Length: 322
Image 1: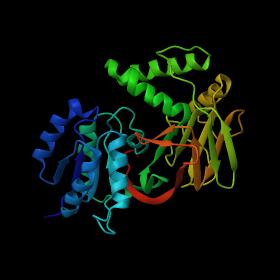
Image 2 (image 1 turned 135 degrees about the vertical axis):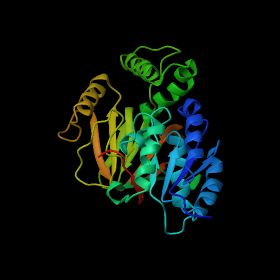
Image 3 (image 1 turned 30 degrees about the horizontal axis):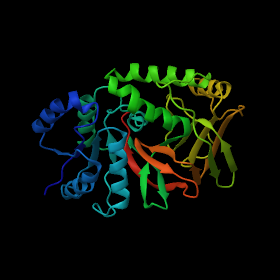
Image 4 (image 1 turned 45 degrees about the horizontal axis):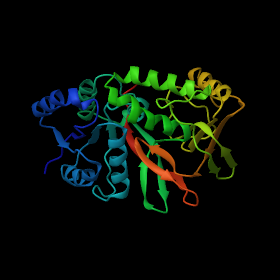
């Protein structure tokens, strides 16, 4: 097969593609230098990349939610379809949260982002390439690592589950859904309980290599290699490429301190009571059936069966923002 400028891997079932995919298919049909491959399940991504490797794309573009991106990154790192010549990765804005696309400057209309990526792929991409460190997640039940960029645990994971099970089925716009979820979390923090409110997070143990152990209930637990967190604020850290751990204790005062610091871009500037920000190359999370989400995919830690997080080799990504 000949070399394609862009290979586009789409998941028709992701939220944004319900309305956008027909236009994207039409655009691909009009541009023969785009090779378009669609999958509906994560277990189809390996076969998709095996086929995509045959066209030797200049850029691999992922059109799906964070779960689709996580599956593709895992297959890129664990598989050998491209040998040592991995193409740079780009991510279209899509899905419910799409933190990876946001970090790479892809916002707004996915078709416009694809159009811009095609323009870049027809020229010199070098000035638009950035290296991103990745998180490798392993456990006793999963010796082959899952690869991603953002992990949410404790109360944050509970909120993600709450959104999936209680809010998203209502069919409301994403922005409205997230506002409702935030209000529900705040009410739960204030001590209110009810069938429609999130449950309190379970007790967990987080071991940060060379930095000690955190124990307790955390309203938010996040591990990321991204430059931006959920609220779009950058995190001030001493080292680039490290795993950044943010743990906020499950108290309203601690959550408000962390919230205002994130909004104001002040995380990491000074110590805040109940707000823990650490950097490490290795982190373990252990708890009684404690769920974590790695780029939208759920994993579960158990007592004596911790989830291990380490740094994976960096990959090259295409950044659309200047």
